[in-house]
Amino acid sequence: MKKCLYILFIILYSMLGEVVIANTNLAYFTILTNEELHTKATQHFNTQSDSSILYYSVLYNRYDNTMSIQEKELCADALLNTGIMHYRKNNYSTAMDLWLKGLKICFDNDFNHILSQIYNYIGNIYSVHYDYEQSINFYKKSLEAANESNDITLLNHTLTNLIHALCYQEKTEEAKYYFDILQQNNGDKRGRYKYDILICRAIIAATQKDKNATIDNYLKSVVVVEQEGLNLQCKGAAYNGLAKCYVAHNQLDSALKYFHLNESIARNSGTTDLLVVSLGNLANIYERKGNKEKASFYKNAYNEINDSIFNQREFNSLKNAQFLYELDNNNIIITQLTEQKRNDELKIMMQRRWLLTITIGLVIGCILLVILYIQKRDIKKAYNELFNVNQESLKREDSYKTRLALMHEMYETQQAEKISEKVETTEKNEKNDTSTLNISNELRMEISNGIMHIMENEEEICNSEFNIARLSSLIGTNQRYVSQVINDDYGMNFRSLLNECRIKVAMKRLSDFNNYGNFTIKAISESVGYKSQANFIRVFSQYTGIKPSIYQKISKERN
Image (cartoon, rainbow, N blue to C red):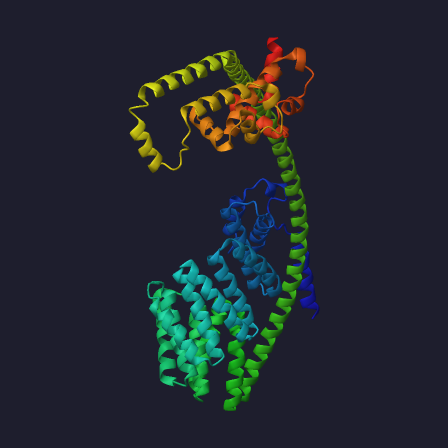
């Protein structure tokens, strides 16, 4: 006992003195890219697990949603592989925590290849603890994700584990269903695939109590191990299956043969767990055979190694606790350095962005000023041109009377000359055209003259109550005749004619600063008969092309 404690003390002392990572400058990790961290971790995966775990932990602790999809996949893979290394050390709770984090990343980003592997390893943990119902559930989830990833190797590996778990639960028919799928995936050319087919066939036969098929397939799997150069653990699994089959059929000598072979394999390969199982089974069989000497020998050997395993596991637990403590401290320091570096980079990036934004803002501001200047100049030019056009229109207003008088004189003359020729045509048209009123030439001329005279009366048309009824009353005829004559002579309805006349009056008043200089736009609109300023502005803009305020401003500039 003292010797064991002394050895344990020496090991602990040496462990505390060793350097986990050759480069103790933790700032070194902050300068490595995510790809470099993953590469270095992968290089140490099978040789220096502690170093590999440290590299992987730095990588997955960097995870955030702003990463590229490739970097997120590296983080998910880091969580998977770190969990695998803890799984190999029997740190199942730590492995489970890491895989659960990996599951979230895989779900968010559809990394089905990694998702399948995580589910498969979680299923293995439940199998180790003989909870086959849960392991079956996770193997099925792994199978679904493997199908999505189209990875036949991963698919076959998951199918093999699922078939084993189903057989342990004696769900033979379901196991056979998945075994059929496994056989159909014959595109897998690995030697391990041939081995898995035979092992699955053997374990299914064992659940069906088919001794010959069980033994035959286990023996064939041993041949495949030797032909394909598979590891000794594969051969040990086959021998273990053979021995159990012989035990089930009470052929204890044959069972002893294969348990002894497994003992030899375990000792040669250093597989302690396999050795413990073999020694325990040998002790039980020799006891059943009545060979107490050998039963005692193997039982003592079993207890000695089992105690050693217990001590080793206790030591591994202590070592892992120390390592995890150091790893947590290192992760805290690395995280702080990484965060500081990230903040510095973010600060520089923000400064650059602000500088770029200000520069772009100034350039855009200058461009907008130039554009506004050009637009303002062009608009001013256009307004002036429209103003000139409207002024010319007002100057030609006097010629309207002459033109209308000549038009009516020509119209009367033409009607007198052609009246005899159009009598028949007129009568015919009057019969066929019910939409046109039959107005005599004298009455038409009288109404036309009346309209022209009254529409020149500013006081009358600028009255807000002025309408076609008032116009007809002043002329002394009915509204229909007045409306017909306005449509024929002016080519518009009464409302359009009234708006045109009022707008011309408004244009004069907007330019008459002696009499209307103090009038607002609203006052001008009311003075020409509009009750609504908005309606006046709309009609004025429609007829002149510019707003009344702009028209007034240009008039003031020119005066």
